[in-house]
Image (cartoon, rainbow, N blue to C red):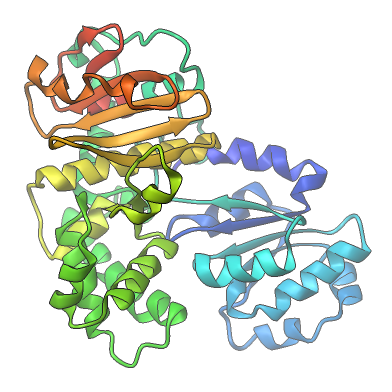
Length: 416
């Protein structure tokens, strides 16, 4: 088991009035049950997936829940939405009961939660492990914040990074965690040291199969999974690229609207994230094509049925996904965009904070040159808020400052 950065936040929330009902959601196998049972050891654990035992729980009145299970963890609660109504009734009638609700389907769980528990719960999204979390040795340990997390917490402070990754005293352990992330992604089960690499690959293949057989069927009553499987593979092959829905529709033999619905399914089941195109005009942002990134490189490789080297687009996706996860655990509100400027200029990632923007170029290269920073030129002129800083993230061990606001840094040094 690895440490989770969110553990401190969850414990603090649970001690307040706001934390009487906490909802954990996220992809299957991200460690929701493990973390909940670790943090709330005195809570009764109830699995809603067990068809033998779930029946009696469905018959309990609010008064019986209050008397028999005043503190409980309800796992896979979206399987029986009526239980959410029961928990709501307990919440409204008594002050002391506290509940943790777990579910792996954002669409099914959150639609019911928003309908029944609006204003009554705190929602926590749990993603695969971040690189700093991969670098921990136990669930009781504290995950050190990455340089990125330190910077994003205090974006007004000067970026202070060692001249070379080779000078970082924790280089070896950061690189080891980064290499695991590159090869297998961040799912907690794959960090078990007993597993061989071959067993990790098999686990990922089975994960993709289980996702199709369980999560996708939960989201939609497909008569035929084949069009969805085709779309899943086509999208994986195009991770990190601007999506052409018409082309995907032709490839999969479905309509453009169906393609858009399938992409939505992948996003709400925590397999992908969509980055809208940035524009000053909010309506235009919605009209422009998004970039879609897979959230976990291990799952991406399993969908593509490949092993070994990664492409530039796959590298971009795994870095964007890591930035996304690290922002999530900080609970700092931010918007993720990609940017295309007339003349062919592109910015891989534009992170929008309340106080301004942070731009990222992501390069699968061992040597960054000044020319790699050319797309940052003149960005301040088009933004509606200040450009706080620009980063080039790569595999170049040397840290370079191309200006006071443009820094090139090794991915593992910055994110590890």
